[in-house]
Image (tube, rainbow, N blue to C red; front, side, top):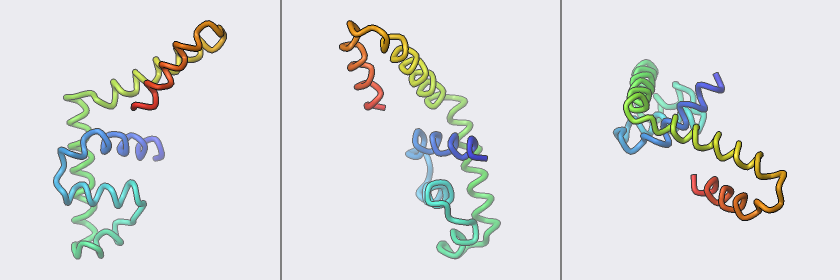
Length: 109
């Protein structure tokens, strides 16, 4: 469950601008603020089922965006490659400049 939540949070970070304000609100409250479906339904004066359906549809949309654009997959690959490079250059002090640049790159993402 934690892995799924982490993935949805990343997808939300990448694609939230493509969502409606209501979808963004529900996703933020449910996944980022850890609200229950009942709490969200009370805040928006809708049924718990309506909130559940909206969140599931939005998750499906996020996955579809990822299939088409692959922003999260590319991000993850970059992060892994940077970590591998950092490990490789860590053992050689002559590579401090490279290490510094890679760390700057990590900070940008």
